[in-house]
Amino acid sequence: MAFLQKLLFTVARRIAADPRARDKAKRVFESEIKPRAQQAGENLKSEIDDIARDTNLKREPARFAGRLARRVIDRAKGK
Image 1 (cartoon, one colour):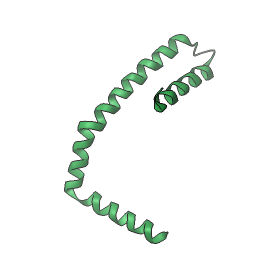
Image 2: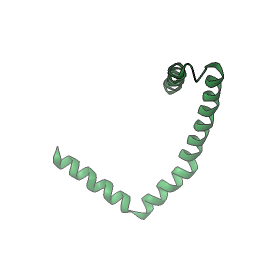
Image 3: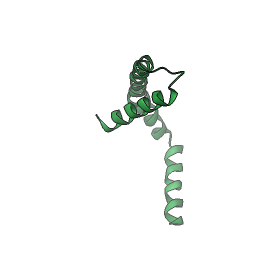
Image 4: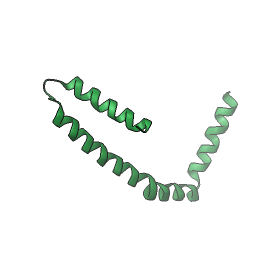
């Protein structure tokens, strides 16, 4: 097990040191990952606003958190 772990870390270190791999990772992050994450954040913000309107945050903070958690889990499952 230790050999495999050492081998994987060595490979990961070499890939991270490769300028071509870092450039490719940067391009993929900027073109695909970052826009999706920003859109997901905007969608989540609008859902948080909807839940906050329906729930009294001062009296029922646990209810708000539960509804938010349920909605996030449902979205992750694709419901």
